[in-house]
Length: 413
Image (cartoon, rainbow, N blue to C red; front, side, top):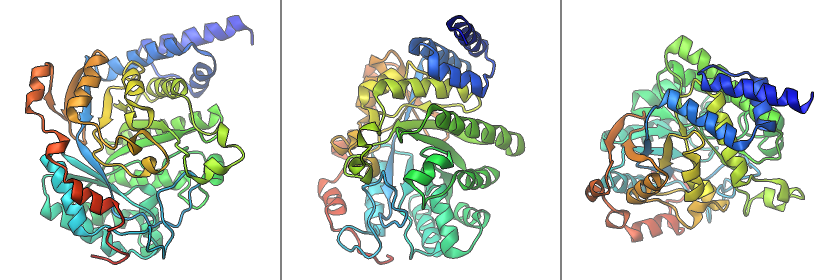
């Protein structure tokens, strides 16, 4: 194929995007391989305006909470987990600690917790049901997006119950959403190399299909930089788009957002690999990927920037590469932090700072809930006077106790 032919095909694919049309897998791959990054960004912003017109950029006040770090999957990109029986590093957080974290989140104006953990071999289904039920009854104002497809699969292995039964029981006691954790690259060629004990692609989508059938809020995630090829990334995006088409047709609902980031490998087995220098992705690569995802995933309504892994400035730039959401305050994050992400040194971003970042990028900040309902728009700096600061809410001693080795030992409380 000549350069002229490639340029013609690129222009035709970009025109289809600007005209609000769907592009094919081959179009997406062609743009990924050959299109100018600013042309892709322009197309991504056009798609963003088609789906979410205007200058408002949303964000969420929430907290990532890990109920346990005990895990048996041994993912090569994880430095967070502890092996079963490791009573020095391993923990199950007590209800007292979890409650404190939720109370701080509510005091900050938070509306959701995203609660995930390792694949603990000894926790029965009853543990998860009791935990969600207790949180929902004790803190009814907080939305509970919990676990992930891989955790649901693991709970099924331990309990012998179906995904449908597990999710139905969890929803009945107050779980409102299933986050898209454990997605990484949804292509088994890559998964079998970096996380062979973890959920495979078909099962990840299978669990999400059940979640959509039950009307749970779901998100889709993707992690790049596993030495995958562009075809693996496009395979992931194609599977997401196909699943979204099917779920929307069958159930009237599907993934409400997509977020991607680059793998962090500090202190993980991947850092010790002879290919260590080939893992990860540059900021430019992340932005290019974000724009391609926005262009291709024409049936997913929202795309979030990932400041926790890419940094605030790249997060700002992502708003010009198709993102309409700045993500979350985090308040707390442990998993990618343990592998060297930005959150290792800055575990949270104040709402006031998120507003500044969004405004500096040329947009208007607005707080949303987990379902992307706008709660309050902040067009002027003076509107920020109503915000609560983290230092007025967080209890440093309680957080030190919860993260300094005084976690509940391996017992169910």
